[in-house]
Length: 350
Image (tube, rainbow, N blue to C red; front, top):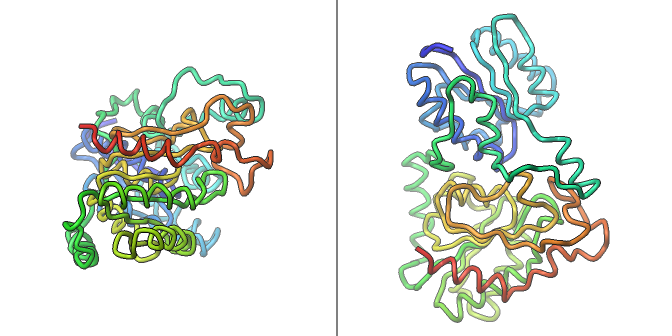
């Protein structure tokens, strides 16, 4: 690969996976400062990389266009004559995009599918070490001299987004409070969600015992869940102590607002990785998933709270709609008191 190489990175979804790809983009740019680095992702996640300073072009695929849209996108990619395609999704769609003319070198992520299968289905841990997905994305490029710099995740937030968030948050007058605690009580799959009432209990204790303001983060589909947490805290500590921002902020706006928090308590979710990109202190709650899958907070002060040793765990690498055993011990055995103490300890750490 020469200094003026043209590289395309493919990762269609989702929030956490795309944020975890930002170290790859940074070190690619460092390795090929005069080269072209482009990115393919789905339209709804494009804001996460659209303003990334390490990229030249972001292709936004609209899934609603189906195969016709994918074929049109491939035609654009073929016309660019890339020297290297880095497939860090390794799906049917990404394989279709990367399969074309001779002369274009392609590399793909090693997802450790066999190890993952053995751990989920047989409960045999064949992982030799716990490696972040951020590092796995870079592995295929080691032979090109591309190495992780250890500087963690990053998001490039435009000034207009930062100013907009400042205006929305200003009315909360956060300076009145001694601490600001962020809660992220949602996740796409049920078995990755710590019970909402426990998030509320932790938030209420910080509001009462540490004069904290509680900010609740979530997407448009999380408003009901986040509102329930907000209502529980407000009923005991007062409405001024808690505000749900769920559904009110874009992904980048949520990340910008997280910068105001002293600590974030979160499920294993995309918002957890947004918090990591903001270098926030994180208490992460892991239920049906485990760190071996690579989705843990990267390069920031964090602690993962989980119930190790459960014979049924992990039951999935992405989460499930219900507990297959019916008891949900992986989450129910994590107490609010334990999370409160871990959060308080982390919040006071330097």
